[in-house]
Amino acid sequence: MAFDFSFDALKNSFFDTKAVMAAAKNEYRKTASRFGAYTRTRMKSSLRYKPGKSKPGHPPHVHRSRSKYTRPKKATDGTTVRRQVSPLKELIFFAFDHETQSVVIGPVKFGTAADVKVPGLLEKGGAGTFKAGRSGERKRGVWSARPFVKPAGDAEAQSGKFLKG
Image (cartoon, rainbow, N blue to C red; front, side):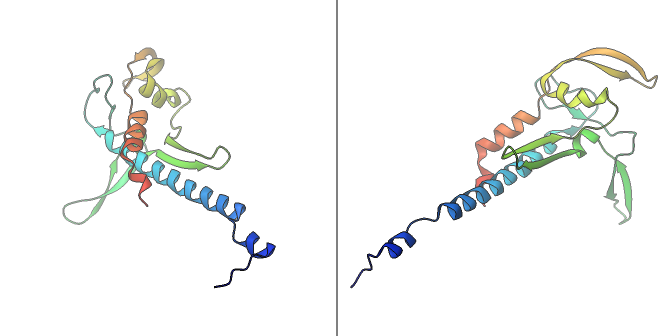
């Protein structure tokens, strides 16, 4: 058996650094996107439609909005009806940020300028303003933390499901 020890033969047998790095980046992007998808699903499933407030420290209960947020639902007789849904639950998305090479997961901004802070207040707690009942009057209040983003991300990271492709 004869081996070719010429410079060109040896040079071609080493890893192509650019190709290896490109493949590694592509695989990282796929894994991060899978992590985002699984975490988004877990976040949405942790938000339950229930009346009243949840206990502090537990994911918040969501309520059907009287606004424009609806989703088709198949009725028992086969017809399709529009059902009101919670904007908090329906507007959770994820995206891969190419600049920071990370995945961003969470609810998008919705509602008025005062309502934009609500998802953050639910997650961490704190003081804020809210619209009181049907009067529409703005009042100040304090939210207890009802985290749903961090627990979902931690649970998915621990499960490792996103690593299986």
